[in-house]
Image (tube, helix red, strand yellow):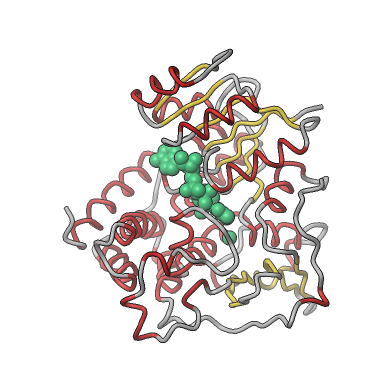
Length: 385
Ligand code: NAD
Ligand code: MG
C-alpha cells in the first residue's frame, strides 16, 4: 500500500528532503499535492518527477506563470491560503507534511487536521502559536501528529514503549549555533552571513537565524510542551555542540533514553512518514570511534536571551507564545534585510511581549488576530511601521 502525501512547503529545505525520501521509496509513497512559495523552477521539476494532482503557489500571478511554465499533463493549479487548504485537504491525501516556515503554516495544517489527515509536523510555529487548540483538534479528529523536528523525533523515539507517567524530564539538546563561543561584546555586530553559517545543519534562512539566537530552542521548548504534554518546568535545554545526541528523556528511576545519529533531517522525516517502520534514508552511519567526544553544558542566558523569553512566554499565558513568535518573525526578517542588528532581535521581541496583555484563545481566529497585532507592534517597536 502506498501512503498518499501532501507536502506543504515542498520547495523548502524540509520539503526537498521529504521528496528525496519519497523518490527513494516510490513503492511506499504517492504525492497528491505540493505547495510552494515563489520558487517556480524547483516546483516545475518536482511536478515533472512526482506528478501531483494539485499544486499551489503564493499568488494568482505566480499560478498563471506556473501554468505557462508546465509542460505535459498539468495538475490543478491553486494559489494563496485557499490553495494551501485545497492541497492540505485533498480527498485522497492520508498524511500532510507540514513544512511551511512560520505562522503561515498554521491555517493549512489546522485544515488538514479537520479533514482527518495525519500530520508529519516540521512547522513548529503551528504548536508555538496555537498549541493547546491544535492538540485538542488532533484528539477531536482522531488523527496522528508525528514530529519531524529532530529533537522531538528523538524524544518521541525515547518515549516509545515507556510509561508516560514515569517521565521526569525532557532534555532537549542544542548545538548553540554559530555564536556559541563568540565573545559576547561582538554579538551586536555579527553579520547576516555569519549568522547564516550554521556549524552542523543546513536549513532554511529563518530557522538558521533562530538557531543563532537560540530562539529556535525556545520555540522547541514550547513545541515539546504541547507535543508531549509536559510542563515547562520539566523541559530542560542542554548545549551539545556536536549534534549527535538529538535529545533525551529522563525517567523516575534515573535512567535516561537518548536517540543518536549523524545530523541529517532525512532520518526524523522518514520516521514520521513510515512510523513505526524504518526505511533506508541514505543518512551516513554513526561512527562512534571517530567522534572526538560528546560535550554538554548549560546555556548562557546572557548570550541567548531568546531562550529565556520562550520560558517567560509559556509561563505568561496562552497568547504570549504567539506574540513572541510573530515578533520573532518580523525581527528576523528585519535582521536579514540589514535593518536591525543581531542582538536587537531578542530585545525587540521582548519589547513587543512587554506591550501585550496575555489572554486565553478560544478559536484559531483569535490566534490569527493576536499574530497580526504582534507583527504590527513588532514593526512599530523596531521603528519600521
Ligand atoms: P524553508 O524556508 O527552506 O522552506 C519553507 C517552505 O515554505 C518553502 O517551500 C517556501 O516556499 C514555503 N513558504 C514560505 N513562506 C510561505 C508562505 N507565507 N506561504 C506559503 N508557503 C510559504 O524552511 P525550512 O527550513 O524547510 O523549514 C520549514 C519548517 O520546518 C519551519 O517551521 C522550520 O522551523 C521547521 N524545521 C526545519 C528544519 C530544517 O532542517 N530545515 C529542522 C526542523 C524544523
Ligand atoms: Mg530542531
